[in-house]
Amino acid sequence: MLRKCPSYTIAPAGPSDIPRVIEVDKAAGTLFDPTGLLSEDALADHVPEEVLISAIRQDQLDVVRMEDGLTVGFTLVSHRGKGLYLDQISVDPAHGRKGIGRALMDHVIRKAVDNGFPEVTLSTFRDLAWNAPFYASIGFRPIPRKAMEDFMFDIEEAQKPFMDVSKRVFMRKRVRRTPFRVTRSA
Image (cartoon, rainbow, N blue to C red):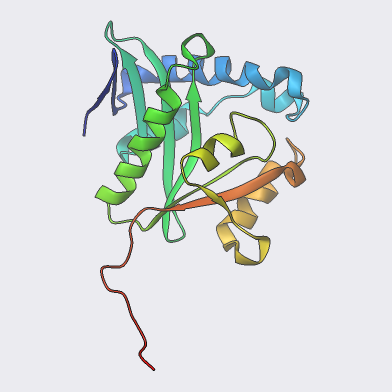
């Protein structure tokens, strides 16, 4: 499904997008340099090429392209638990603050709905303006630890060597409601 926003198109990624997706990933990572929230290893890293190739095959990597074809952002999702999990969203900082991240999130939500998932989940930094507060502005709500699913604890364990996971939060947005409402009469 193609989706248009002003002078940008969101579409499934192809193999030719991989080098630019890696560039965007690295560029977006520079936003974390001054925060001290990521280890130096994490700041120097990017999504591995083999992960991107697999995601393309599974329709789990979408890109934002400018009218001239330049990729300026991407989302990487996976099917985890009951829903669609946002593994990563990145926008080249040179194209930031233009609504691209919000358009990408709208696209992810539409993708979840189109594929019959009841929710989208993600993990993010609690206090960075472009993290949890941004997701809250589009309807994501924190998941209490007691309600976290097993895959969330696995993600948290994988993140521990690269960041202080106590500064992160898992969030959920329900995207599909049940078609029936049960009411009780007295």
